[in-house]
Length: 87
Image 1 (tube, rainbow, N blue to C red):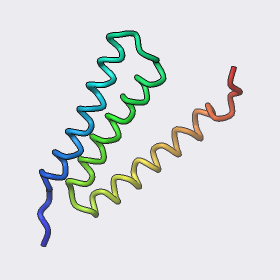
Image 2: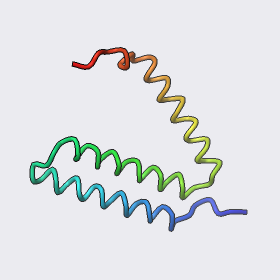
Image 3: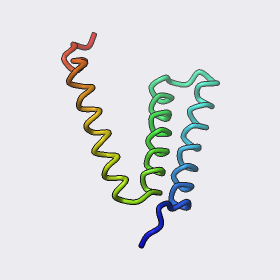
Image 4: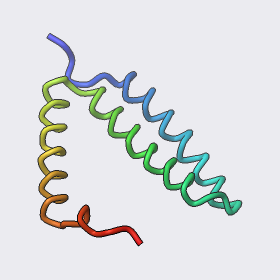
């Protein structure tokens, strides 16, 4: 039986996320490009999530991803934002 949580895997992803957040913070303090700052913040969140999912059991990962996919699809279709033309 595998353990419920792998702290080493989570810590690896957490450190990568912290690097991205530090870079985003430095760019923000010095007037860096907003798109790059946003990208690094998105990467920070993604790496924290990957660390959490990878550090937990596979079945929890699959269940969580299916839940997120369902919630995302529901939000996209009900909001209709994807039908709004870009200005």
